[in-house]
Image (cartoon, rainbow, N blue to C red; front, side, top):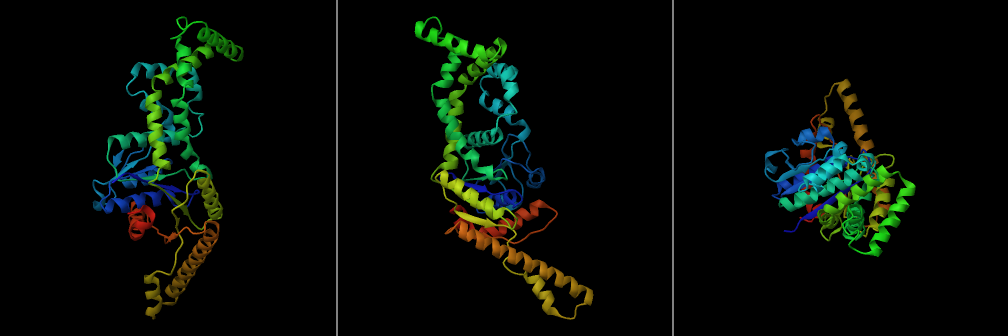
Length: 362
């Protein structure tokens, strides 16, 4: 089968990362080789899944049923720029050494907005080229801007496939300088003169060197960017909006729906966490058993009231989102509590398994 991508988007604190891991686990349990990638890795969850936070794909060990089929990629945000350089210049060690010493690169390295998301996608594209997967589950950043990165690969590929990077790289090296005649030479002098009035000669040399090194790897970058673009905006891509009964969840989901519309996409389904639909069976059984001590009966009453409050909150969230995202089916998941996050992942996977046809097109 062709690779299918599922992108989970939502605001902060709605259980999106855990839901992404659980969905990937549910798919792996059914025999699908699945890669889950999170651009905002939670180290506690990474530890529970048995994977490292780095630039490599690792087999995730959550339970025996997923052995050999569940894999995870959780890149380290603080090493994004260096990971980017390592990836692009893997076959160009001398150019890489020059780039790492370039003062303009060092100045911009930690200031590029969206760099971590771009690097994560490039690592996914590389993994897809090297391994065979059936499903890719992408956990986006926990904010309204979490979907901004979807348009990055296509824009960057267009930039790198164009002539600008090559031209600036040649300009920096002077490859076509004197031999190309008056037009190129005159253009070069004009550009140098313009930049020379804006920056000092040392910075100008570093800027020119930066473009020279990027020109060397532009084809590799453009290829990975196009693969990333297809993964995020292809015909086999699904988007899930994840929400929970929090103050801004409904507004965040509606905003992300509108953002998807501008990208030419539509949410496949809503996943509503902590949206209990009923009181659990064990609580009802205890209450109907009778003969309970007064203190225990009072405690059960408190627990019952709490569950009813969660149920009302879930009902309200489903109603509000049903109006703002009409026609999109919702999957409601109960509140789950456990000290071990891997246990929550397994329990959520159990709950999601019957809905994989809707969520993942299984």
